[in-house]
Length: 131
Image 1 (cartoon, rainbow, N blue to C red):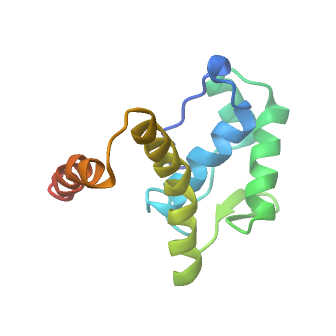
Image 2 (image 1 turned 180 degrees about the vertical axis):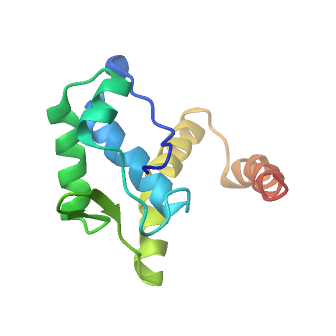
Image 3 (image 1 turned 30 degrees about the vertical axis):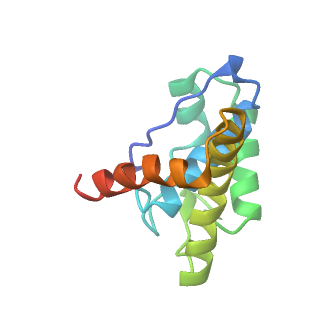
């Protein structure tokens, strides 16, 4: 049985839907929400659930497979691969880096110093550890 994926797409975001899906699945794998050995929903199931073209789902899955995050098991579907420790750390950084770049750009636009940004970020990081 496929795990329940927490995925959402926003056609108006400007980011291609296949990329939104790829990034969200990558994040869930890196964050441990999708464990090694689990199977992703079938292309058809996910396309119906999200009301998108099955080719869009297929493209996202193919790119994840190309990157070694999932593998096709004939007759069963796409299975999440076990990441190596170094690959898992790299995957987490790849997910986080664009968000940090956005924060840095916004901080510069607001003329905030690095110290001010760190002061705002630190409590948020500590808060999430207690969840």
